[in-house]
Image 1 (cartoon, rainbow, N blue to C red):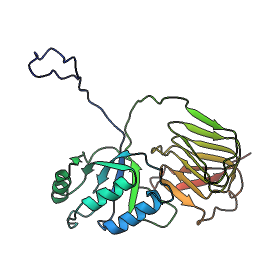
Image 2 (image 1 turned 180 degrees about the vertical axis):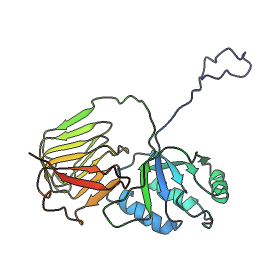
Image 3 (image 1 turned 90 degrees about the horizontal axis):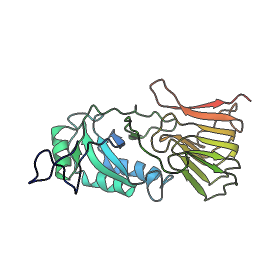
Image 4 (image 1 turned 30 degrees about the vertical axis):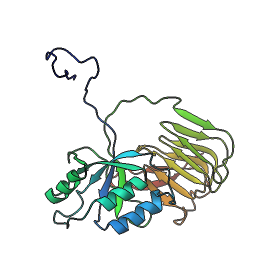
Length: 262
């Protein structure tokens, strides 16, 4: 759809601009508390500058979802929440599922109202201790070009402190991922060697992404933001053995770690 400029006839399109409808992928913050101090602590621990995954987001557009809060949740100032979200490299743009009071407050701060019936993934059930929020991506049917290669191949060992991000691609690692190293991909991650560092597949919200390793001994594994750390040890049948990691499809969005038959 194109829109004509002022002063032109309705059938004449402006040479300086054209307006078209668009659908964009968004990250959704599904609130389960209005305690901003608790929320800030949890978010900064995971995604803050000094957190476990400071580069997990890359100024991603965000919608704040109030649908899991009670309708009579007392109104609070949204400014502290917006500050902590921006510090985690998120860009709050919209609000959905909020009461009239909350929505009025959000609109006054320049946010917009998003439709509550937008399709989205189910809330995650992580294997670690429950937190007061879940970050997931809104799933839309979008066709977009991804520049460059669709598979990144790394054939050298990754030392502590090194990080590889396969943006818009799968990642194949042919050497060891040592403790303190990170491998991140928007698609799948294949490690044909010991995986002892952190591995985050589906980093942009792909819930179908998987992690494969010939020797699974990770510090952290994550699929589309659902993670498990070494504080929760792997079962003996998969620890240090060929295994894959994926999300369940039973409505609970929990990590499944399964042995690979070789």
